[in-house]
Length: 306
Image 1 (cartoon, helix red, strand yellow):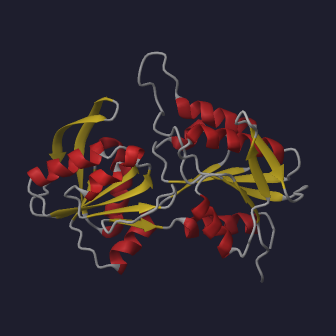
Image 2 (cartoon, helix red, strand yellow):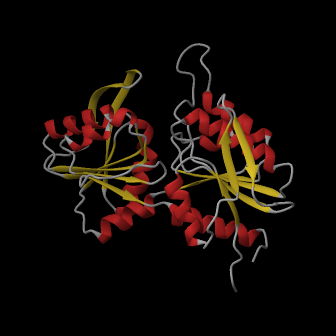
Image 3 (cartoon, one colour):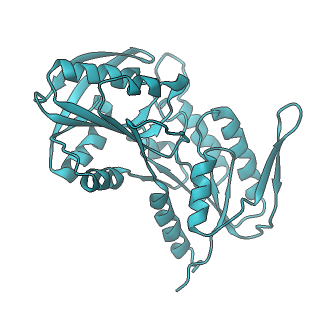
């Protein structure tokens, strides 16, 4: 049975990723035009009628975060007036790290974003490797969080990468690292790392034996790179043999990937949830598009669109 092409539109973020995804469905055009007025207000124009249709809206909420957020809200607001259902795909979800009170009276920022999205009554949200373990709890909207574990395992097997130890770089990432360790039947090691202030860490100890081991660190986000460099130096101080790192969302604020290039890290493997032009042998990019495509196909089947 032939799969009917889905109705897909996307915002201004991560265009390389979204265009490659459209290519899989043999869709050649984005049916939305996004312009700006002289004062930088957005002007949204649809190039096709979507009356009473199911729509997949793609938007990654990476830098410039607030432009992309407003961009997203305006598009959804327009779509909800004419469409049957809107399925929202957000590969990288901004503000996911601000999921609790860090100071007295500070906002729980992800809760505010979730409340706004809930207001639009979206049918479903798809994302991947959320920062918070309780991410779904902030939303009334149905949300599915895809996992990149299969991509990592496939890459390790395909390239015969020797791994003897899985490391969680902090307590918060234990569930993510444990899932991979179980998948590969390897021992899990935990770094007791804390943040006294933003973008600075203090490492207290390593829980597990890492001496002379080939190690793999798995985490969801790399931003300034300071944390992962300090953890790497800490591990080499404790006599590890080598370390490779798998990160889903590579923010790379202030070109922080340069720190990785000049570090003791053997290889950094990231995904394409955030656009990054890679010209470095030490960095490798895995695509997540097939994970999203598979889920989109499942939704189409459930919605009787084939």
